[in-house]
Amino acid sequence: MAKQKKKMDLPQKTCEVCKRNFQWRKKWEKVWDDVKYCSDKCRKNRNQEILKSKATPQ
Ligand SMILES: [Zn+2]
Image (cartoon, rainbow, N blue to C red; front, top):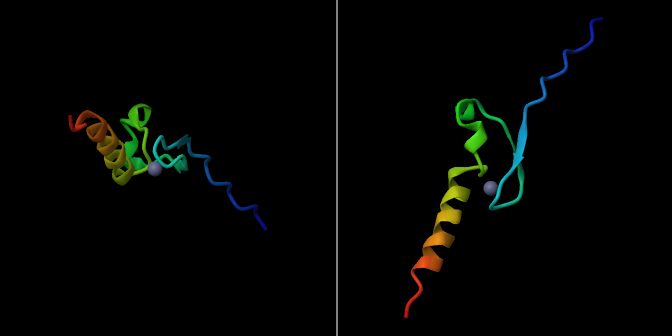
Protein backbone atom coordinates (compact mmCIF):
# COMPACT_ATOMS: atom_id res chain seq x y z
CA MET A 1 0.00 0.00 0.00
CA ALA A 2 1.36 3.39 -0.99
CA LYS A 3 1.98 5.97 1.64
CA GLN A 4 -0.40 8.86 1.79
CA LYS A 5 0.98 11.93 0.16
CA LYS A 6 1.93 14.54 2.69
CA LYS A 7 0.09 17.80 2.35
CA MET A 8 2.24 20.64 1.21
CA ASP A 9 3.13 22.90 4.06
CA LEU A 10 1.58 26.28 3.55
CA PRO A 11 3.19 29.42 4.92
CA GLN A 12 1.73 30.88 8.08
CA LYS A 13 1.55 34.27 9.72
CA THR A 14 0.36 35.65 13.00
CA CYS A 15 -2.55 38.05 12.94
CA GLU A 16 -1.61 41.40 14.47
CA VAL A 17 -5.04 41.83 15.99
CA CYS A 18 -6.07 38.47 17.43
CA LYS A 19 -2.55 36.98 17.57
CA ARG A 20 -3.69 33.75 16.01
CA ASN A 21 -1.81 31.93 13.33
CA PHE A 22 -3.45 31.82 9.96
CA GLN A 23 -2.54 29.96 6.86
CA TRP A 24 -1.85 31.06 3.36
CA ARG A 25 -4.91 31.24 1.17
CA LYS A 26 -5.31 31.30 -2.55
CA LYS A 27 -6.94 34.74 -2.44
CA TRP A 28 -3.75 36.11 -0.87
CA GLU A 29 -1.54 34.67 -3.55
CA LYS A 30 -0.41 38.07 -4.82
CA VAL A 31 -0.55 40.07 -1.62
CA TRP A 32 0.80 37.58 0.90
CA ASP A 33 3.70 39.84 1.85
CA ASP A 34 1.23 42.57 2.81
CA VAL A 35 -1.22 40.38 4.64
CA LYS A 36 -1.20 41.16 8.36
CA TYR A 37 -4.61 40.08 9.54
CA CYS A 38 -6.39 36.76 9.45
CA SER A 39 -9.63 38.25 8.24
CA ASP A 40 -11.45 41.40 7.23
CA LYS A 41 -12.95 41.44 10.69
CA CYS A 42 -9.55 41.80 12.29
CA ARG A 43 -8.51 44.41 9.77
CA LYS A 44 -11.59 46.43 10.64
CA ASN A 45 -10.92 46.05 14.33
CA ARG A 46 -7.49 47.45 13.77
CA ASN A 47 -8.89 50.39 11.80
CA GLN A 48 -11.38 51.07 14.54
CA GLU A 49 -8.61 51.36 17.07
CA ILE A 50 -6.86 53.87 14.89
CA LEU A 51 -10.06 55.84 14.42
CA LYS A 52 -10.71 55.80 18.13
CA SER A 53 -7.34 57.26 18.97
CA LYS A 54 -7.73 59.92 16.31
CA ALA A 55 -11.25 60.90 17.29
CA THR A 56 -10.47 61.85 20.84
CA PRO A 57 -13.01 64.37 22.08
CA GLN A 58 -11.54 67.57 23.43
ZN1 LIG B 1 -7.13 37.96 13.47
